[in-house]
Length: 302
Image 1 (cartoon, rainbow, N blue to C red):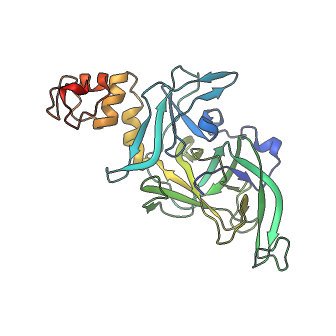
Image 2 (cartoon, rainbow, N blue to C red):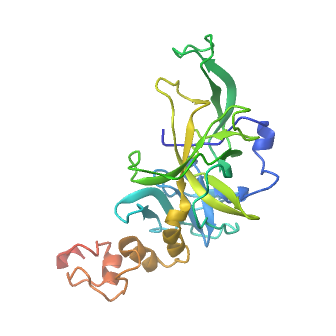
């Protein structure tokens, strides 16, 4: 399932739906398109590519997307898309900036996950044939509950995993595992569920909280009932240090032409008067007419 949400093992919903005592960036986690995203600063929001750009609410105000600002990030090898999108808001929501991690996290690093997805419901158990309440209880966990902004904790399971993806482009992700109490579980053990795609994975580097990952996918067992989070499931989050150069290249941009230029050229061949495809239209004219600057167009295309 490609969507995610912090689903809490320990603590009550009244606690988990308020910022943690050591807050890594609760206010910066926002909700585009009913899922999750993270406000980075300079009006930029980052979310999962399969969530896409969408207006967000901060307090009583709603902030629309700046037209033409959505930029899909490239895969690690520079070809094709990955499951990460950046978009810019039309107005400043007044939130602080966050810092992006500069190097991959070591295994067993403690992380805090924040998202807008489904919370913990009632505890459930299944036997080996997936009979609810069957004995012995082979599979245990929770049903998904209501949708709400909430947080939880976990640990990075190992080195980042490179994969061809799940239909949204090649990805490089961390894995965290949903563990029962006493088996490496954290105090507020979390597992992803629906609607938290794009949600934040924060890690503390020294004394500073950094945005280290973006939740994008979860695992489930063969035959696992829908709308459940069971011990042994995993959450996958994009490893952001790998994509940091692209993020930092986009974050200062604001003007319409600069956004268009980066989306098409990634910083190269950006002169507004250049005509890299040799069709007689400058880059600025291609932008104005809504043409592809890398495909020759007939004069009538304007």
